[in-house]
Length: 436
Image (cartoon, rainbow, N blue to C red; front, side):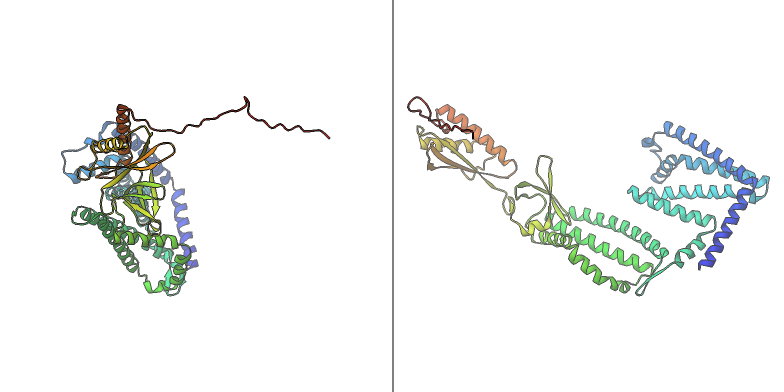
């Protein structure tokens, strides 16, 4: 369709619309549609107030129950369509069929919207539901008024040639629709595969995450290739963009690519995995999720640290549960010189051994480490089976050790400073400023 044909199409459409609006039957049909719309709105309000959607048709088969709920949720459209059909039938038999053409179009549009709502009700994503519903309704509207072929020709007449690729609005719309369908099916397939992989107990968490990512990426690539091939796009024609894409990745997307590759490396070498307790810099927490670009570390106090995968590969990471969950707890304390050091080490070891989380197979150890200026310094070490709550365990043992010291009369030293003043006064230097 060239520009001349397009202008003729616009003029013909304008004349048809003008002739329709000039007819008195147009206003009668429009009035009947307004009355039907008002009745439909009132009927929907009444139905929604009186019908419980949660218990609607609970004893019916699932397809019928689903159909009933969609009809109730779209009650205004259903009532409007029914009233318009009745008006159309009445005018069709009372006068010429052409005088109720607008009612016929409105009835078909309402019926098309009900059919689209019924089909899209199986989707869960609200944005996709709106996009598919509006697009399908516009296509149905163009088909009903007989302008679908002309619109398709118009969208295909405007083109941009890039190498061997002829890019038109129609091609973009078809590719977008097929990509949307392909990605939706890919998401369903990948979610099913993920549920099956996560249910397998023979695989470690890191291997499960790695397999899920590989499946998602593979299905996504296959979906894109199939969708582009279905609309007639030759992938070799896109080779002209490969240089620009390479430069873009090298300059602007290098961090994203680095994090993606680092994530694959982390999943392959199993240095960290979901559930590990790690310390990265000043942040300590348990890994709750491993994503394509980052890992999520839950600190235990409501915070979550999102650490880029590249940082885990290039920086020092302390993994408390890499090969063994057993954790050594260290407590440093001191006493004054009046205490018996042998009794102090004995009390400390017994106090740690009495804690319920202390490992029974590895007895605690307490040693004297230093004769300091303020008193004797000791070190207490003991093992617990899991690093979770290590600070709480350390606090419990220190409180119990404090009670044991109180019972035995052992004092904990603290610094004391003594100031002696000679001559009855502190020396004070006074400076007198003489004005000029």
